[in-house]
Image 1 (cartoon, helix red, strand yellow):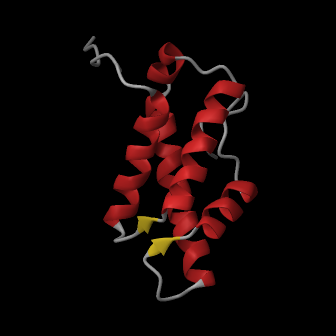
Image 2: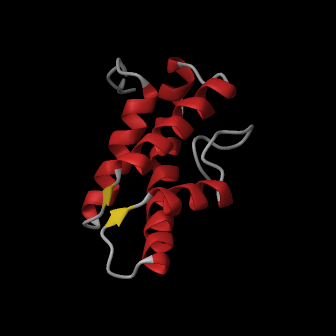
Length: 112
């Protein structure tokens, strides 16, 4: 059995980096307001559901997959609001986060 390297960084910044990478692949960027809101969603979700470093490490692929699903949804929301935009505004991020769960529950991690 091959062991994965330990996750020594905080999960919220890690999840943020995954989101930024996914957006950059589609040539999108996050506005400062959207960045703050999404980071807070990730952080508060992990805290509310008491997802610690060990559990996050165990479910990291699930978190990455869910963020990979969330970013295209935010892109769709932004394009629907402003077709020529390549910058996520706070409205698109928050609308999508309200429609989709950005926090873990008993069966999901970070988004569904």
